[in-house]
Length: 343
Image (cartoon, rainbow, N blue to C red; front, side):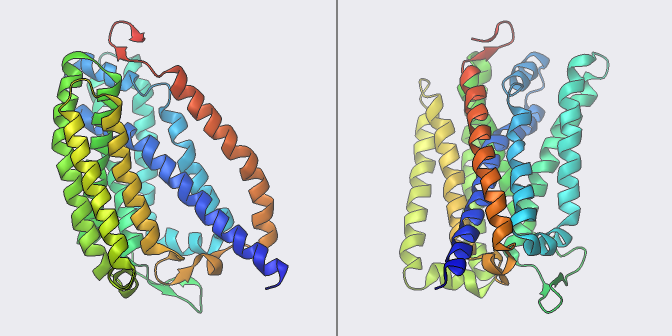
């Protein structure tokens, strides 16, 4: 293999990994943030809502950095995939972005008014819910397949192709999973009766999340032949069994730790494990396609020199983002309450 081809292959895989990593970090970090917003609807007391919002006040806007990095990386490193995917999901993408903007405005404005605070609470709840639902629908639309015109290298589907029972199921599953993450985050960050209620809510959303995981996992292989052959032929059976066993172990471990009053960090970590396992399964299903099962990462990749140029910038930028993210979470690592803030 010529050197240029070898470099091209390596760079393409590296960029696919970097984008996947950025999306995973976004889901992990902003997932509990959006889940906390949806949990607002279940906690009507103003004092409790203030504590909940303050628990993410130092980090919520930094969490969304990873969404920008993932979207920008897709545009720069895989322009063909960007051109094919975006027209297929314009509606949910626009809905997600508007929801995130409206949610961010609500986050700031609810502290600056007494008269309109209930209105901004509703905006915070609805923005969080719509953003989470839209993200799930986008994922579902990508998984179910995008109709493309290969000779024209263009999207060939319709305006409403993204809206199906499968995409709605994925969207609801993401909402349930984010609420589980949010509840486990608040178990870690709060004390007293609010923490106890969050344990109970986590006990509700844990089986709901796993139920959606099972539903989507059983549904996905029948969407496209490539998925079925990947999971249910040859070594796929063994991999499917391992992933299912690890998911079950994380689920029962989560339920066990939630019942223990002394367990605060471990429920959050086990909830994250469920998401990481799902993300790993998603990677197994899709690789090497970036538009399943139509366009591979190599077919969609930018020129080699462009990837190499951008990789230098990413190699500098990503460690900096990781460092300041870790620093922010370390500084604000303590508990929070309505009277004393972080301690």
